[in-house]
Image 1: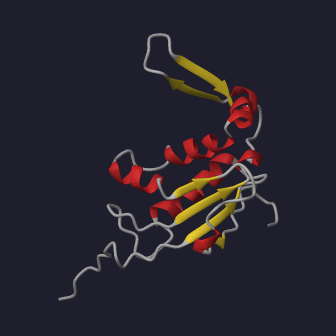
Image 2 (image 1 turned 180 degrees about the vertical axis):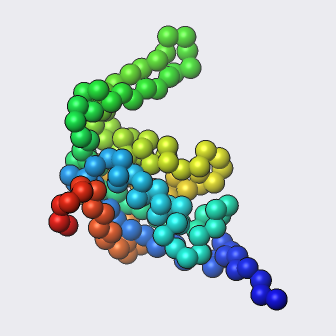
Image 3 (image 1 turned 135 degrees about the vertical axis):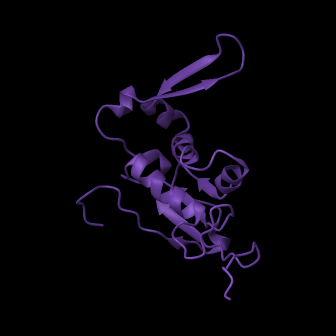
Length: 151
């Protein structure tokens, strides 16, 4: 009788990928990144293990949204104090901390448990085109988020 293959932490082959977020749609980009972080693009995917890869996102300041979401999409945070709710729009947050937009979108697509927190640590987001992970020799990953456009 054959046994089901179960990958171990030591056999998980983790790669590094670089994704350029310039002129990419936020939600479509975040779903692809979340799939890679979970490892769903690999044949060794196991739901309860971290079999995913590392993802470096560059040019986070140039990610786009469609329609009026720039003015209408709101990001909320709370200080924990009474009346401590802070709200800001997509455009304002993109000027202030562009990395947080992609981080928040991807984090919402990961499991809400210890595994999700572990997977989130594999995501590295940078506002500009430079990143400090050249030593890991990341592969460039081309993600096309605009339907019908040629890459």
